Image 1 (cartoon, rainbow, N blue to C red):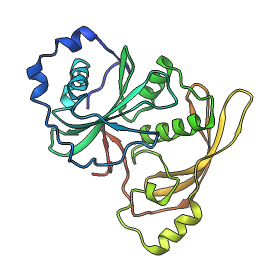
Image 2: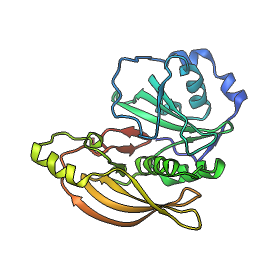
Image 3: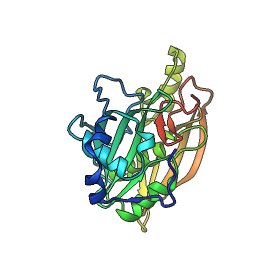
Image 4: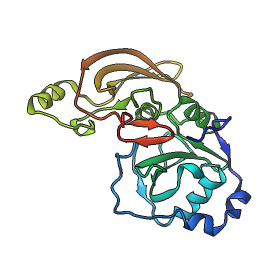
Length: 253
């Protein structure tokens, strides 16, 4: 994993343009048919951008010192979330040095770059550089989906689950499906404080347990858990999250 002293890397257009073509072409193993190891974070419309953006993004990654994490680039998808004005998210499907497939998630601003590495410091640094737009409930809920998916603990992310299809099951029985149908519900905004905090209820999956939660999303992007209770435990599912700099289908692998 590449760790930088500062959470954001300043982009240098001169350095990006100076990356030799030979340094890029040897890493472009474009394979749009290769399945993604996990779906994108559910925050809107992700667009496939291979091969159009492959060279541009590889230049950006190499100039930022992220080359060791991208030995082979197979595919790219991009998203412009509704909760930021200038932020572009790029997810790169790569073959890791150990030969396994995973993704690398980047938050890109015109002048800075954040490698979303599972820690909150990168998310908060992106918020400081490009203040979040949380004026409406849809923006607040999408932001919460994003934050919970990419700020991870030892057992993976905190996946917002709103329907049965959101759960990364390894197996499910009809009886379990019926129990989940009684528990699952969409994210619901049930209030906003005078200071602009959004109060949101929903379900989170973490460490194979499903929680019913009450959360607060503040105007600056801070997220606070107000209340939680376990609805179902020991679920037969994977633990998606970010581990050693890569977004993976199961952090236990």
